[in-house]
Length: 512
Image (cartoon, rainbow, N blue to C red; front, side):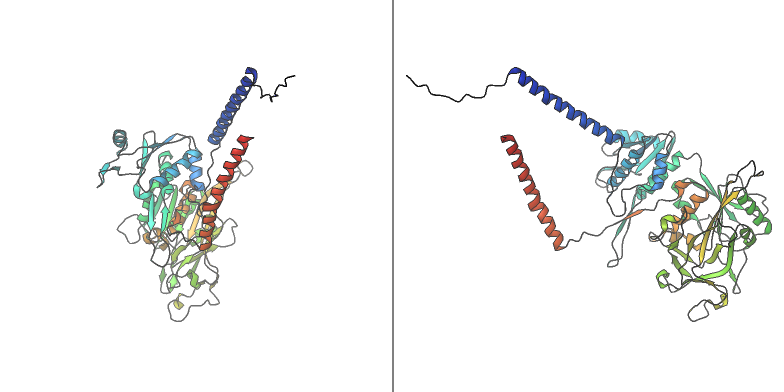
């Protein structure tokens, strides 16, 4: 009998039904994956979030910017006239993306004057923007951006976006101040505010003025708040029975001559009726005595004591010069205008007097104070008399209060029917030299931020509480040998090994 060779049968080919089922499964899996990806993208769009891991929160909007952008009730358009190669482009682009993430009412348009000449020409005519040409032949705009709402628009200059503080060699690193958020948020405030906030400045007593040529000029403060939609107006108090209408706040800054009783009563009535006052009352010294301002009784009725004492600071950590009447303040109490300064800011004052709560009104809050080593000198004949200054028995003990704030509570005519409600606001500070242009413009000091914050609090415009510019160290990165070894281990060994293992796993999976 012939013996037939046996042969192991091969796997039978898959039937048409099995193949169809396999293809259907793969197609359904692909469609499901597309649906999942689409859902993830939709959720990412609806719940947009970005992380900022920089040490100073370089890419995190301030609470004030968030409030302004989220509070938009009308669509705004922001036109960025920077090319991608310009130094300020990336920062401005990053900032605008954060604005868009906060509100759907923000519409951003990128227009490169060099590459999109026709579109730029049309917008330049609309907004009054000028076109220039660089030495390289590249076309540029004379502004960085324009914020527009309807027929209102506001220009943001190139110099408003970034400024550099150059350090003294060997002392500290250069720092870059990211000022774009200040400028762009301020521009949004400009175009969305119904009217300008008006600050009225008293005259007739030797106060600080709005005239540029004067030695005691407020022009630096006025120009600094240019983007905050604030209008400034001077008014003479002598012979007036009431504060002019339309004043959101009245500033009494550095009077040299005393106010009359009638003028003090007028300001008191204005405050009691819901008005807002900022009083900067320097010590005016004559014959070793601080002259009265005429406002002492009015302030005392509101719980504020204006002490005839010159503040002397003895803590060397607070002195920038050997003169103990010129010093920096680093101690701030919890208040809307000063909380952001706690633990990280310095305000320079010179020739200040003590201003403190008198204890009769628990609503009066100290805003800033000296160190424990300071004191208030009441015998001014001892100032500059030679020898080391030291507190006497009659002097004010430190820490000495330098500024106070008060929210008036306005009572209704009939308490049973009309409940109490917020009235006027008052800030009193014992120095106005802190408002000099040199100090306001110093990036190392918070003088401007404090003055702007006081203005915002008094006028109930939280957007006016200025956004402090963020600073980024400009120095190089220093790596130790351990750092280099760790980088070599991760880049040269671990990453290639991980790729190799992933490849082997994929190959074994295919084989199985």
